[in-house]
Image 1 (tube, helix red, strand yellow):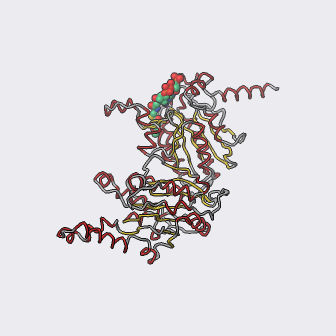
Image 2: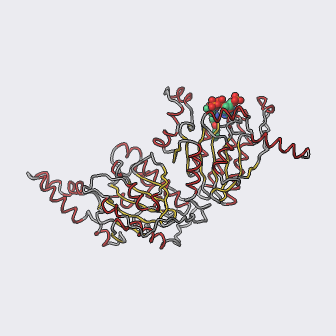
Image 3: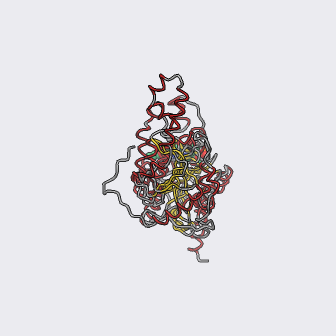
Length: 514
Ligand code: HXC
């Protein structure tokens, strides 16, 4: 081999080793893959092309000129995921703890820019000690450059972040600006200020995991949209979720046909609603019966469980499912559920994913916690999201649709395209008990047989209002359907709406109630 080729090979091998074999072993001992192994898992075999392999930092403070690693702690490039172009950056913790300096930031900005110019998704694999301390303000500038690109790309191409190690300080704001944040159980954490600063400022004693581990962000803060137990399953989940999304906002999500016929009758749904209106049932069971092959990719599975959000396919078509969950807090809408739903609806709308809503909602959650916490402005976000969404919207009211929640959950009044109700649906201003207590308060207070009267009034109210036919008479419901036919009706509706065109008024940007 010629000398120059040997030199290239030597440099390539050095680049592949990142911070060196010892540090790689240390990384793997923690149960983590290396930055390059993650890329191998993420992309179709043999499709990854690296960019900036020989980039090195130009810093000389703190003897940094003695330690210049090829790649500068981040592997960047592009490849194919299930045959579709995707960009990636993967931080290498073996090089200065994956910390971000000028060169490292420039490499990330390059792939973000390419993703925007070429209309393809970008995945960020985060494993970093944050701003590179030796480079000072230059690294802060680097972060800001990334934040700007994340913001400009928002709604243009899908951006997905995986947290696969530390993600601390201002570094958290890049993932937070992207569409989906995945975290890996036990090995990842995210916080603006770590346990030491927390102890100094608030005197709280807390571990990194309790403060910002996967469980904290999946259940409490809602920062994490999904958690997987290890790097490999996290990367496989990212491959899967991309399959529901188009490459960019100008394209439609790809269809993927299954063997599950759209004419399949979902007979178990006929008996799924309990006799008593106050008894719960699991809306996951309804989803499982409706979607292709019972396959459902849930987002925010452990957060605000009173609302279920996730991707599925019906008749091969990608859909975003939004469903009240009667098995948790009776499916009530509260602050967390409103935030979760609003974000998901906007994500689907931005990327042309039709929305399918399954509704069984007793209303908004009452109480000082909710009112003082701003349920008015947060509930308005969900309302706003459904109002502005221009993708096909199909709603099925399975049981309760009470009060403001009836309007909010993609009613026809806010441009729901097809709205169905099951025969046992109750569509009214409020439930029978509350309505009778208000309408007949004086009457009941004076009566000696108040309980009997109350029961009679409730029965009368139920007969008059707690059914789907009043709404259907006004045309607020397109049809009352047998539960078993739900899958077929939705599939036909999606087909009918395939070329729907609807535009919102032109504006600089909206003023979502934040
Ligand atoms: C430079 C860093 C670094 C950093 C880690 N390293 N973080 N080098 N800048 N920010 C280096 C370490 O010196 C060490 O090098 C190697 O990476 C591995 O780090 P360890 O500490 O040995 O690893 P571990 O015990 O696993 O701990 C990881 C860690 C810890 C929890 C991330 O390193 C840590 O707390 N780092 C600092 C985190 C931080 O405060 N970052 C700044 C946040 S503020 P050697 O050569 O000794 O092996 C921020 C602002 C962004 O990011 C603002 C944007 C607007």
